[in-house]
Length: 405
Image (cartoon, rainbow, N blue to C red; front, side, top):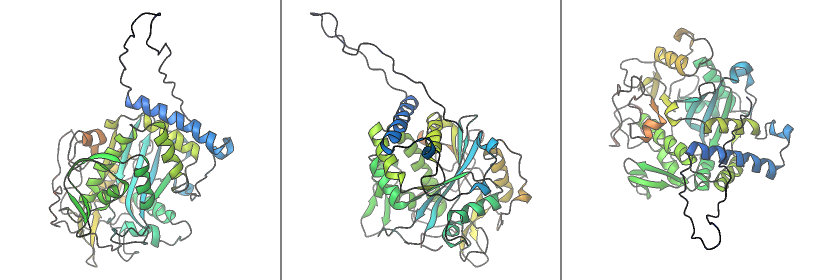
């Protein structure tokens, strides 16, 4: 995909605001800068500064500098990637945060597949719940254990990429992984995330890890508590997935307000702490594409399914196969043929209700106050039920965050 330069300019003119000697100062009204235009200017500055500071020549710019695994065996042909790409984004729990329920397990507690449709300037995000059932090859049967416990221990990301590619019959063109430690540092590097926390979160009762309800700026540590907490949701892990939509929306809006020094600090911080197969040129090109996005055209969905139990009695999230096939065909295969549900290697454990089959929100809808997970995209009306209320009652069968894989 080629870089697409943006020639936005503020124009010239005398900025001193004074006429001939003896005249009074003339006041100028400062026009507000469009957020998308501002972000494009920032990204252009970052491109120049990164190349200048790092001395990145053309060859290095197009070389993988992050030590990422080669996943081309699972990706789309180049002619398709010029039109759209699927990028796997994972948050990995591999640090020893004392507030964490489980540490050093390298569980992928955040799994999202992002489709960038360049031709329509649209993006679609698929959230894969960590408890999603993927079969008995793993003791827990859950997708979050695949990364660390698959056969490939040298390039662990291939375990997860390969499984999603196989079960969803979906090409994965690129990937990005971030540890929770780096997640915290990145949030702090940009000065925190301003968002409205819908209810008080007591991440570790008795330990003082509390986020009060209301509008506030979350630190990196608080942001981690927010995206990982699930004990207080009536829907358990599904409540956490929905809450993560609120955070993603707030974070995307926050990124449009960054100044150049904050953006540079963020790029330098993540440079050697994020694992990805993307080259620097890819990252900068995709960042410029992202700057063009209308937040109303950034949509979030969760894998359709329902909380249930495995044959071993474990709390899991079971996929609804037909509904998943429809969603993938509509939103994640914009330039390829549809794939029938019978050709997905998904194991459907249960299909008793459809609460979570229509669950889409746009980022703009979430910023405007729509309930996460309450469908605002199918004919622009709410069609789902069973949303969490932070009550602490677990009626979903997904259990509490015990650290089980």
